[in-house]
Length: 284
Image (cartoon, rainbow, N blue to C red; front, side, top):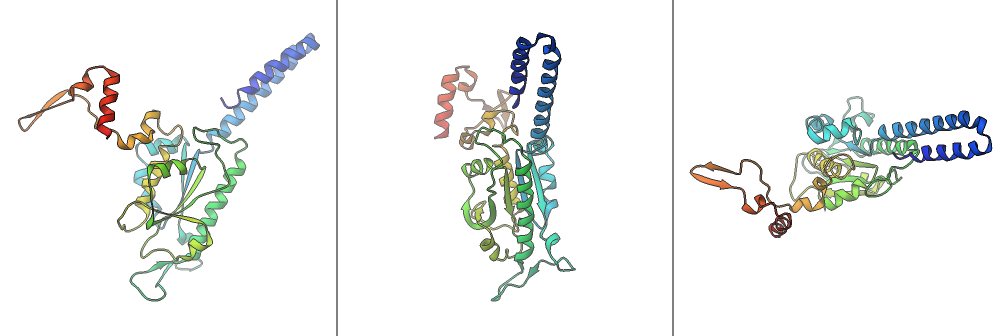
C-alpha cells in the first residue's frame, strides 16, 4: 500500500507514548492507529478513483469508439479505472444554431473544412479537465515509468503527413497522466488550430483514412498496454513483443489437406535456454 507508512508511524508513536505515560498508552495508541487507518483508506480510495491515464478525444463521431472500447482488455481497464476515455464533440462548442462546424476552404478546393474555433474550445475544455485532475491528485502515483500528474498535456493532431506512430512513442505518451487526440474529418481541420496550441502531428501510417477515429483507437490500444495494471502479465507489454516469434498451442499436430502440421520440436523439449535461443534467432 502506498500509505502503509502511516501504520508504522502509529506503532512508533504509541510505543513512545507508552514509555512516557503507560496509563494513557492504550487510549492514545488506539486513536493514533485509527487515524493511520483512516488516512490509508482515504488515499487508497483517492488513488483507485483517479484513473492512471485519461485520453481526451476530440471527434465528431464519439460513438464510433463504443464497440472497440466495450470489449476485452480495454473494457476491463476502463471498469477498473486504469484508463479513462473522454469525448469532446466540436459540435457542442459551436455557436451556430444548426450545430454546423464545417465550411468551404479559402482558395478553393474539394470538400469541406472543420472550423478552428469549435475545435479550439473543445481542446480548452479538455485541458481544463486535465488540470482539475492534476490538482485533485493529492499524492502522485509512482509508476514503472515516472511520477504521473505532470502539468504538461500532449496534444496530438492526427495527420497522414505527421511523424510515424510507433510503440516507442506510445511508451513516451504512457508516462503522461493525460493525452489529447484530435480526430480530423472531411478535408481536414483549419490549420490555425496548430498555431493556437503546440501540437504533435502523428500519422498511423502512409495511407489516407476517412477520419482520425481509427488511428485514435490504435493509439489508445498501444498506450494503454503500457499503463501499469492494464495487462496482468508484464511480459505481454514488453516492447520486444513487437518482433516476437511465431507462437503455437495445442494440439501438437493436426492434419490439413493431407499435410501434417506440427509444433517445432524445440518448443516441446523443455530446455528453456535452448528455446530462448531459438526465439532470438526467429526474431532476426
